[in-house]
Image (cartoon, rainbow, N blue to C red; front, side, top):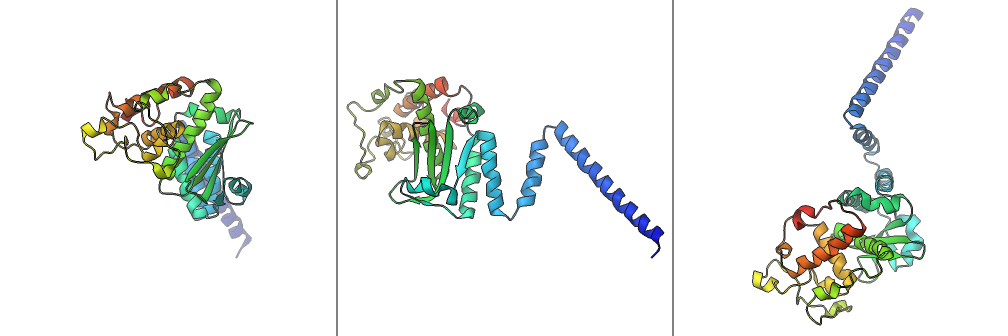
Length: 286
């Protein structure tokens, strides 16, 4: 093989890479002009990590932090926190992958300004993905004296609903810092003389909405689930989780129903203290 042929072959390789580089740059430029640069980067990145669940999980954790200011942890990084709430650590990367994808999509249901408090680091939210609790809990939310919020979410069929339920607790913690007597009239929306029942084993279906009830029966309903009857805070969190996971307009959303009155009261406080922008449930509730 002559030296002249070798030089010619090298030149063709350089030419190939030059053309390829031009094509990539042109593609990026076009996507940028169309406002799709980020989508292209995500597609390319996800292609690189396809098949590597652990790396993909790190990607979603970073996206949730970048987009929403929320810190997510699991596995060995969560061991000290999880043991404090009598739960078991989640190490399964495949389960975590499903949880992270569900969480990322669920958070899109909130207006972006809801997350301002976390992005500005005035309040920090840490979400621990756990395997399960050693009692009957599915999820928990807490707040410490440093204005740090924590959510513990176990893997369950109702993972998204649990997320919205606990996230409302976080929103309520935040609102209580601004409003001393938040929801002070809440009990007036319950049956006269009603008292919440903290013992879950004693809860009944009385006053609980059911799509199988007749309209007359549902005219005397005040709660969206039995668990709503545990306490005021759980009542509100259950309502919020319910409307954040709607896929159609339920009967309790008719004007004049007891539950719709509760929803209106709940949302007025949210719009006044959190965000005036539309949430996912807007099209169903209004």
